[in-house]
Image (cartoon, rainbow, N blue to C red; front, side, top):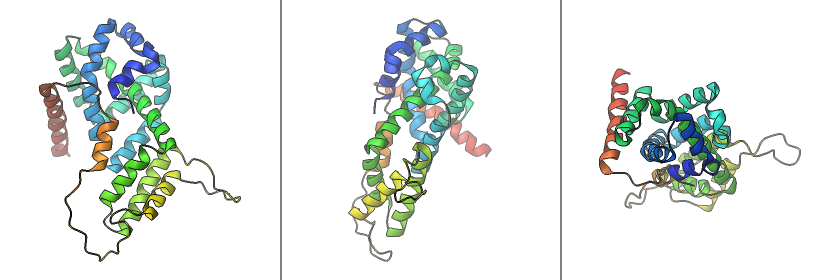
Length: 268
């Protein structure tokens, strides 16, 4: 999948960025700098919003629920009242609160010299375009079997400690992905039952054998070093900002999320 920065710059063969420049009274160099400032924030937000398989399923379902693919393909629709409303809904999904969005706009303004008010108006449009781009690429990847098939197989082998857990894990992810991308068709022999290609794919991988998937529940797990979480790596690759970020800038982004999210937990 394309990194977020490259996805934005290539949107509609570059016409999206030129249209955004005209919409917000910026030149193309300013738009480029704005994207360089915002993409690390969106990458961080996406990764945190997809922190586990359940959250990832919720994020993809949110992307599927609106007109985000249309906004990715036609920027003018992202500037309509409906587009702005959908963009704000996606911002809340990605960042978790309006306060985080405002803090990100403030930090981007300080880094680039572009007015914070422009960022406040730009953020929902960028959220809509990115959501449409990510969902479109995800749908193509799922239809082709990669990288979703590899990711799910690795996740299952990492998470399933018994056959029952593996089955539950398979069913959960299969249902989430079916709800997100569709059932993929009807079963044969006159049956009206829909096929869930994601559940079938997971079951096939289970039968092929993964560590822990076919062991009895009372079996002693083999002691091995804990592997890196393949799900985390997949999410990190999927939502790669695509540009190098100064450590201080990324540290400030992480602080924004940590401070506001901790405050929300205390209030809750």
